[in-house]
Length: 407
Image (tube, rainbow, N blue to C red; front, side):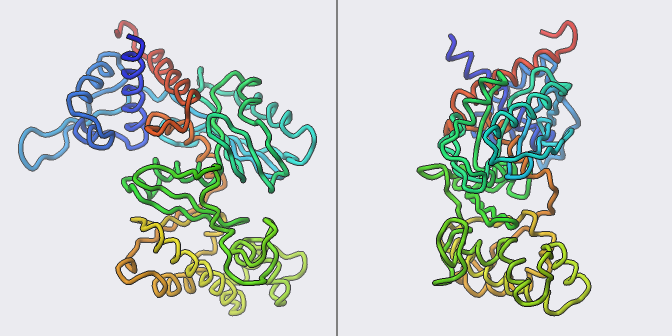
């Protein structure tokens, strides 16, 4: 009986989360996107309607037969916390079940301090205590580094100076909530799969440019993790023999050529920037029409495009999504990127769609929240016991929103 109840709860949470992510949907669309039978969707949505959790909306146009009725959420009670951790600060957001950022906070943070994990616990304790949602569904944490498993959350990160830190265990114990920890690019890829331009695509390559260069890979609808949870280290693709030293210790990595620190270093060396200059200063020069700055970005774009062509040839994605802090200067990257990419991919892939997402500072944290919001679709079980606890909370939170007298 318990297994049957668990399956029913999983179906309920999957329907609620899918409508939250996509907006109002018909039963037929739900069955198709969740890859379950129409009869199961009808049975599940009937109970959700009776419980007051879904409402029937307007009909959709039909090319034949009876028009389909759309189903929408009657409750938006579900919310998740997403956390972006970097060396100098922590950003925490609270996101609704549809991915909308409800509130956010950024606090200074020294990842190298002996008390760093304890300070992170206190930042999150304060943030959770100020939530208007009770209970919250869970906490997702995005880390610039490798994570053994989302549901375990042991972290190794050169950027943070952390080695084998049992972050997930500590946060779960101290905050008494489900906690999922993942590489930040993988988490951002999940957000793109749920809420961004990767929606509706089963094979996607997500590329991030900014301080580092990373990649998230979706294959047959699954975000790949690799043997150690560090798949997608696109920035450490070797590009130039004996090139500049990278933070990983190797030389000539893509990130050591087109990452933010590398761009600023080279722009200073070429006399485009003063020693105290920043990437924002370089972009401002390009905005003002400086030919040298524009050519500089164009050359970086060409390096990125050629490297990405190799990834496209290898992985065969339906779509490439580019995002990150670096896309604020994308018009200047694009002049070098587009011809380099199109000339280096094999002919049948030259029409690959490259979608460039606008960037907001809270996107990394929104990606972390998606670790929680995506658990109803976790057919591979990456979220483990923590995912089951999230789904349980999703059902409990929704039931608590029932209208008086609903049953």
